[in-house]
Every structure is written in C-alpha cells, then in structure tokens.
Length: 543
Image (tube, rainbow, N blue to C red; front, side, top):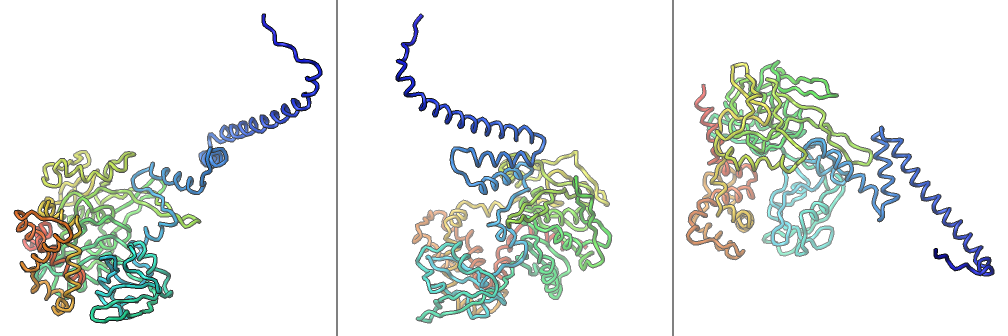
C-alpha cells in the first residue's frame, strides 16, 4: 500500500490560519449557492399550479442567473408576442411604439400637414394636397418640391419615407417650416404650416358605370366608412343610380360595426346580418334596422381571395338573405372576432374572443394550425391547384352546407363562395408588364410626365374630360420606352408592341391620378375589369 509522505509539523501549523480562512470562504460561497438553488427550486415547485407566478418567476430567474446581461423589457415583449401567436393567426401583441401606426388606418385620421407625396430623384414632390387640409390652406400646390424642412436640407440627402413622416407629422396645433421649389419661380418659397387632423379615407372610389349602375369601392372598414359611404351613395343617387356594384375585393376588414352599418343599408328591417359567440362572449345578434336606403334595388358585391373579416360579414349577410348577387372568387376565410385591450405602457393586445356566424349559421373561418405562414400563404395554394382560374378546382367542405331562405346552398368552413365565379385576369400577370412595374419605371415615368406637363393636363378641367379626351399616343409610348432604356430597363424589340398595348391604360390611369386624384384613376383602371363588367351585365339583365 502506498502512503502519502507526512508533512513536517512546523510547516503544518504555519499554514493553518490560511487553510481555515479558505474553508470559511468556501463554506459561505457554497451556502449562498445552495441557498439560491434551493430558493429557486422552491419557488418553481410551489408555483407549479399557478401559471402567472411561474412566468414571473421564470423571467426573474432568467434576468438574475442568465450568463449574459439581458433586457427584461425586451424579453417580456417577446414572451407576450409568442404567447398570443400560439393561440390563433389573428391574436396579436402591438408594441407601444407601433400602436398609433397600427390603429391610424381604422380611426380615420392622423395629425400632419395634409399632402400625398412621392420621393423622386431624392426629392420630396407633392402629388396632391388633401382638400381642406393645412397645406392646401397655406398655399402648397400639386407639383411643389420640398427642399428644406425647418431650415435643414431635405433634398439630395437620401431622405426616406420614414424620415418624411417623422419630420412632417406631429400633434395638431404645432407648426413646421418648409422651403418649396415651384416651377417657374427661381427662389425658394417659405411656408409655415400649422398641423391639423388629416382624414384617412376608407372609400377609394365612386362613379357611374353607365346611366343606371353606380360603383363604390371600399378598401377597409374604418370608423368613418359609413359616413363616407353615405356621401358617395347620395352623390351617385343624384346622378341617377338605380343599381349598385359594391367592390370589396382586397378589403382585409376592420370594424365589425362598420360592416353592420353598411349591410343595414341593403337589408329590410329585422333581417339578421351576423351574430357572434365565444366561450366568455354570449351570443350577440345584429339585425337590420329601418334606416336602409337601398333595400330593393339591384345589388352586386365583388369579392376575391383578399376579401376578409368585415368584408365577408357584408357578403355573407347579402348572400344568406338572398338580397343580391356575389361576384368574383372565394374570399379569404376569417371568421374570428378580436377585442383590443390597451395596456398601461401604451401597448395593446388583440385577443380573439368569439367567432362570427352568417345569418344561416355558418362560420366561414378557414382551418389553421400553428404555422402562420402556411395560413397566410394559402392564397398561393389556391393558385397552384387552379382555384383562381377554374370554379371546379375550388375545395368545398360539403359537410358544412347550409340553405338560404330561397333554398340556395351556401358553404361554411373557408370563405364566402361567390354566386357567380369570375377567374383571375391573367392579362394583369403579363410577364412584360410585371417586369416594367417591378422596375418602377411605369409609376416614375407617369409622375415625371405629369410634372412636366402639369399645366397642359390641368387644362382638361375635370377628371371626366380627361378620361374622355386624353390618349396615351405613340409619341408618349416612344418617350416611355426611351425612359426605360435610360433607366436600364431593356425591352426586347419583338415584345415592344405587346408591352405598349399592356402598359397604355396604366400610364393613362397614373397620369390621371397625379392630376385629378382617384376620380380619374379608378374609372380608367376598371374599364376592362372582367369582374365589374360581369356584375354590370348581371344587374342590367335583372328586372
């Protein structure tokens, strides 16, 4: 057996105080370490049945023990985001920094100076001053260029859209000084603009298709949508409207009450519009009132794969009550209702609290899993298996069939199926046209042409005159193709004629928009829209 060599007695006594000190320090450290481990284990074991405390204890533990320094606020934000995302595709967390931007479009206004702008050649150019807004009242004109903001150069400095918003938006009553360059005037014009509430519109266009058929396009259901609709409806009625096409294509939804108000305009008193119900939300039924002003006239609702939520409420109410004809393609399929709760720090959560059901009792929410990308990209799957081109390719859940009062079969479980199917217009997916749009040359050329010919174009006086009289001539097309070459967007000579035919209506529409805003844009863009043409035919053929 091998034994260690004994230590001389004298040296052992000399090191004894040091050894005792080390043992004492080691004991304190072990006690602290074990106490922490026991305390943390105790906390987690005690709170196994209490989810709230478990999360709080876990966050505290991570903040205290994690190997690197962490920002607990950021960790909480990520935790809340992940928690809500795990529930369904529409429950969501809105950080305080994003709250205003997320809610502005639905509230119907924001504070600013009231201009629509474009950044072209590193310069802010005013496309349109909003009617009645601060800029128009101050004297800013369409086509003006913003060169300075608060005395600092704003042109040629790589300014971005975000920079413009940050510099020009602000609380109503505050002021901003801008230096304007105007065509024909050498020196800068200085304006002091007092910011005010600027309206955000949810109704994109309204005009007469023919002598009796009117057209209204709603892009979202906001707090102001019903008032905007009434204004458009009254204007069209004075022009002789007897039948209406309501375009909800690409409308992602919005406020439930706005959808109910619009539906009420078309349905007789007492007819059901929609009902909602959830685990903690008792069944709530919404019915039409006596105020509807278009309850018996011809009505067509346009929908597509981008129509969701509130749009589907309107389409479902009209379809289930046999009130009008639904034209287009199967809608998105969102039948979940969210409630928004603002938190003390300015952030908010949108939590799904109920499902909504159309009058026949169908829920049109499409299936979903934990994969949100798969849920939102389902539109591409529809294209891949041919649904957007052929009605026979549409997948219907035959187990969720319902009957309307007149005996028509309608389906739940995945969007509103139109009464009359209109396939997607493949001419709008023309590869040459897409190339031009992706390169940005169509929009920028139209803007530059409008800017250089503003006085001449304004001489048309009205959008109606512009639509009837202005033509994109071969000379303008040649100018456009030369512009494309200059921007290094090459067009094969063999496809130039085809490209010219495809791009001509878009150039006219964009030039019209730059001068006469939406009053010129939509009538031109929609002139060959197959869905609108079909809806107008159905209305004119009906009694």
